[in-house]
Length: 304
Length: 251
Image 1: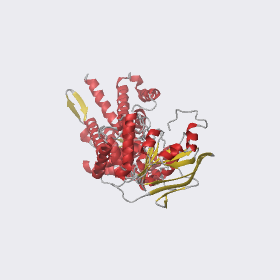
Image 2 (image 1 turned 120 degrees about the horizontal axis):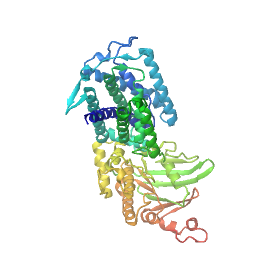
Image 3 (image 1 turned 45 degrees about the vertical axis):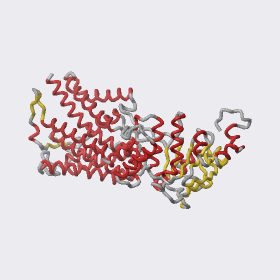
Image 4 (image 1 turned 135 degrees about the vertical axis):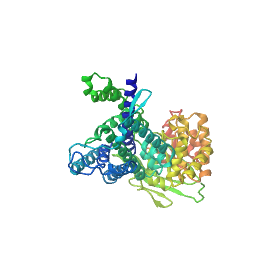
């Protein structure tokens, strides 16, 4: 029983991470029909901004050397600015092109950023230790919960609540949701397109920065692919949830994260290597049964 | 929100063709603020295409659209909304994830109102319409007839000079139609704008329009008061066929 609860906490913690990334992808997709694979590199660059660029595999800290609060703020700021820059320079000029062009350009941006990291930091994985105080575990009701996971869940929950409040209660949030649902109609009603899109990217940057920090605290390693796996998982999460639906993205994130951890914990030892195959087969199954996703929107229908 | 000065929306000799198929072949009409102009015609007559032209979704070629003498033919749909031409859609196109009130507030924010003013305006319009379904109800849960009415309300929240309503009564029952007619008749008085109404339901058209423009096969067939149009032999022929075989038609 305690093992199960521990697995469940693992699952919810990972699910929260995926939910955050999925939300970032879903928001941007909603307002400009762009599946932004560069989201992976926002996360990666956030992680690398912690250290000074050197060839060493145990590099000295840069932003990571700052006191905790300043470090969090500066990493999140770096990633947010990066996300806004990619929007302004790469995606905004293509805004009225078809989704295929946008998708290809997001791959281009993603590879560009990856190459940039290799150029600046070198391609070898590195180790970095921040947030050592969080590696201890907290014991509650006989269950040992690693501090990192408590932090992940708390941060994810806080961000989700803040986002929901922003989207539901503020005028800008309401405009953003309207634009995510029916961009053309929203523009017709005078919703400022550039501002709404910039805010969606800023939020995706903010989420990206936070996720990169949580990841580095958890794994203690830097790798140019660090953002890749969560982004791919989150992309599947948005598709399962019904692409364009924000609650769907969150739901999808939790489903993917929870299933992934359950497979990891309960598959026989020799089959655990196939965990990802299991998750992805499930994605295919869900899509076969509900091609429009679990919480479908009208995002795919575009007519006057 | 009363606009006292008279405004005029003119469309002159509008042609539209889709890959060689003529949708509109020279339609000319005028909509004045204060008017309720009905745009009718058999299926495929070009009514929706005409609304698309007037609201900037379709560029006429050739032909022009002017607001108070100023050429707006080349403006995008968004700019058209800014010069005061608002429209509702056949498929209401409400934001289904938002509440009724928020759908109207968005329009108010869009014309530069503060959040507070936009909210007040939204409540006023809903009250004026006699909408009692709950301001905070999510639009995905609205009955069909309310969806239509809210989409009209949202168009009005843009404080337009001209409101183009595309089949607002479709799918409504008799009682709902009555209510809708009352609303539409009062729009020019209350908001000071001109209304153009596309509708298949002749009872609604005859009940609320002071002028009617009839299209057939992409051309203007007749224009006049409801009485004149009802008696026009060309109109009767277009609607009823040469030998009056379809006496179920509704004129």
